[in-house]
Image (cartoon, rainbow, N blue to C red; front, side):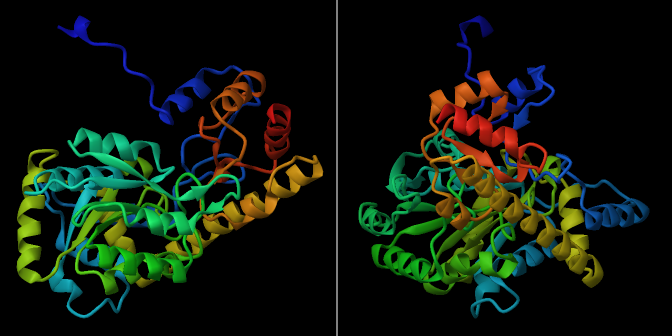
Length: 397
């Protein structure tokens, strides 16, 4: 039976990591997968995470199953992180939060639930968007459409086109937005633009679905949540998919959550029951360890303070590497828009002029691994590899 299968293509991002591993060049550079790296090129375990794990090991007495939607306290802490300590009135009764295996698991569970609505919605995704978005929602049986977002010529948000594009979805359709640190462009709406987006979504009766994978990696935990919180204040329904892979460094623990804001408490119970069915038929109930780490840190003032300081250091290092990258390109007289790159936020930058052919040339000639779209992981740049990276870019462009 398996001979009838066709060979599936490698994953656009993790396939690069596999190719990088096979490359014998000792000076190779991997800027594909979105993981934080320190100046030595390592992805560290945060000190707050290590401290929390020690407490968990010392205090653990059972490996019993968790509830289908996860532990209640974890859900409360996630809601506080996303919506703030003083959320809109009544949000607690209207909001259902379920622990998921990473942000990807949250998105897939949402896709399963959306596909069971009496009127199956179309999901509108920004152009461009994270490569896995289309695969996740297509696998759930949902139709996808493209929403204008990025002006490649100006290397900036095409806000007018985005607002006009929001007139195209039918009432009840889903609009997938990035909460902050847009992947792959690093270009986000301003607070004023978020307000206009919220107003347009409300007027068109559209359901926003926010992929919130990088909270704290842009300008700060509170600052990065402004867009999500504006949507929560102005719309009766909202879906937020959180990931703690980046801001807690819990990549292989697969820790995330989906928070669904319903119109009222009765509707929230309908949401909860359907979330349970989708989870039970998928992975049954969530893994505990990553959520235990997040709960332990956020529930302890000292650990939480240490974690916020480590998150700030990660954010500052990415900013520093972004600046060093632009300065090094300028020193080499590269014809790239450095000012636009400096305006970007978060882990990623989309390099104008780099397409599949140039990306392949960078791999073949320089052993520099970037996504075919021209997206680079700024967190993978170090003082020791930035010269080689810029030489490769100048060489192919």
